[in-house]
Amino acid sequence: MSSFVADVEALKTMRDGFRHYARKHLYTFLEYCDRNYQREWFHTLIADKCEEVYEGKIKRLMIFVPPQHGKSEIVSRRFPAWALGRNPKLKIVGSSYSTDLARNFCRAIQRTIDDRDYAVLFPDTRINNSNVRTDATRGWVRNADMFETVGKGGFYKAVGVSGSLTGTPVDIAIIDDPVKDALEAYSRTYRERVWDWYLNVLLTRLHNDSRQILIMTRWHVDDLAGRILEREGDKWDLVSFPAICESDKEAHRKPGEALWESRHSLERLRGIEARSPRTFASLYQQRPAIEGGNIIQRSWFNYVPLADFERIRDNSPIDYYVDTAYTDNAANDPTGVIGTCSIGNDLYIVCAEKVRMKFPDLIRFLPGYVREHGYTDSSTIRIEPKANGLSVIDQLREGTGLNVTKTPTPRESKETRLNVASPFVESGRVYLVAGAWNESFIEEICAFPSFPHDEYPDLLCYSVDNHLKKSNRVNRRNLTKLAKKLY
Image 1: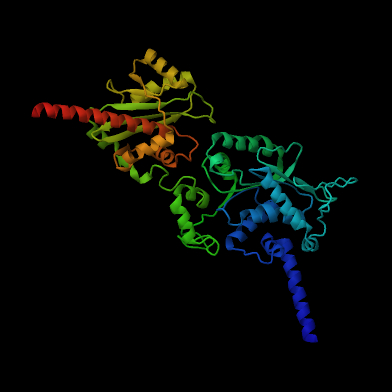
Image 2: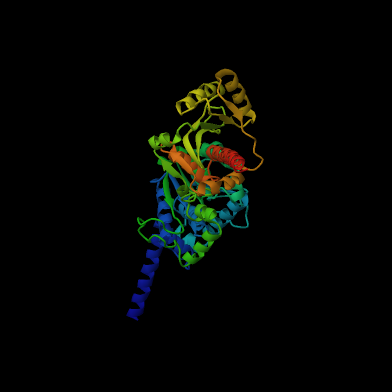
């Protein structure tokens, strides 16, 4: 009997210890809610980071995780329930790309709080009975969009991106996948809508002690995470988990190993990568631009020192291509300029520049820029005659004496045109004259179409097209001369 009593006491001690740690730590709470939960090392790390958000040690947290790796289960379903258990006065907002998904998270949190085991763990945190939408006398709301903690003043509210939060103070804001799919991710209109909602709706509901968690898979470098990181990346804690390890600095796995082998094996991941490298790089590796490039690969470009270029250039003219957008608004597209030189069968890119200027400033800038970078009487300045371009063409022709010409307006999309130009680049016939502009040019070309701006891809297509036409004209002249000699 004494042995039995000792065993019972031991089990009670274990149970009490389990509950103690479930109250204190989110990663234990995951197993408390689901005894069959398979917690991996990265789940523990995510849970630990969420704990730091709750404690106020982290104010802004981004978590990038591949699809179907358990991020929403931790952050959007269990964390709000655990946090409200610790502090039923918290005001939490959960948002996603659709109202329906946000509501699903809200219902999942309610089911967790309804569980009897939760009541044992957190007896002070209660919500209305599931059959009652609103208490007529006390007003404790409970529905698919929102629930309140009875008598404590806390709540959880679900809202879709672009939904209203008027009158809603927020202690913790959770954004879980603000983008549904590639169609939305590649739509500039949709990206602007998400950004406007974040700036003008969500941020206006925060206070000094508010905390934010953004979890998502990366589709596009200009997605919500990309814009935030570009503007205030130093203020955010970032946790990123590529599906396949690419660094020897990870503590829990080696390069080439899968993040969750038992559920998403390396073989399966490689199969997904083979079917769509671009999608795999974005969604699974958290790299919207494929390492090396999307349509154009980084390794395809050659480099030449300026002195060597000047030596082989001889008298070959430099042509300039301009994609105009006269504005000084940092949110709008800049004006792009590149200078190129055709030497034999190869194309040399001499310079590249992006500027944001209003019309008068742009007209003053362009003549000085091209002359500084090798413009001669044999050079041309080629500008597409779209709305802004027509005015620039007319003004430069009238006021500068530069050889300005119109580039034909393309009928195909930029992506189609870059795919057409890519074999020319892949063959190693494009050289970059070494300069400080090289990296920004390469980055934009190789990231296209996952880059917020696309002036350089557009200009590269113009220059390759004109170079090929010029080469064909030269070849035809040479053939004509040869024919005359022979016959």
